[in-house]
Image 1 (cartoon, rainbow, N blue to C red):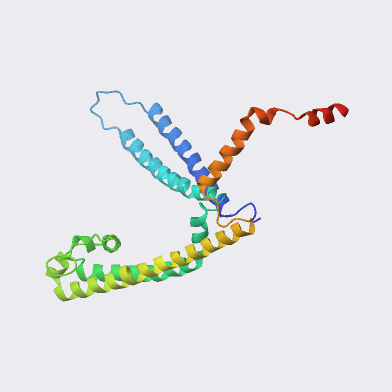
Image 2: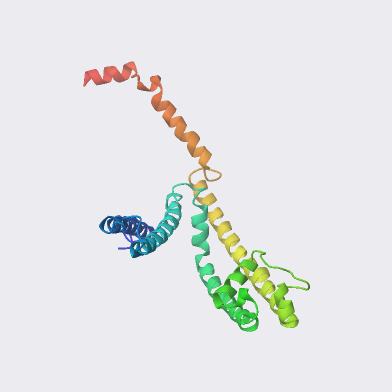
Length: 246
């Protein structure tokens, strides 16, 4: 059963389901437009426009997930080439550690988002809701924050200078400096393991290192050149005599 229903088959099935859903929704939109035509000019408000707009938005949402699944499906076709499959092997080697890292990061991230919302949500729009707070903290991991007149967000320093400084320094130290470096270390360890595995596989085949994509292209062009060469089509005299004797 696992041979036929692995993670790649599930990914393909989800992508095909998105394609089918898109076609069904598109046909439904066209049918709605044809069944309820609008004659202009008119002074009446036609709800068909709003209904078609809602269906179109739903269709675009399906398209988003469909494109996202198509991107992930590319990794399935990278496995045929030793150099291209390095990302797949890296993620595979790091999956257990990444799973536990995500659990730890989620707890810390949600905790800081709650703390920011409770302390600064009543006065700062970026922390007015839990969702806004999480978005502001996520963007701060990539350097999108305002240092302000002292430190941290300028608005935070005006509301509560002491808490603003403590919150900013603690969040940047724990999340940006510690957790992000742990995340990079996990991926680097997985990459080193995947690279070593690729070299061992290549050495078993009598090669010093895995073939690059350019090597495969050169080999393919060489095969095509031999196949298209006129010398390759001619038979040797010994081959013809052997065939006649039969």
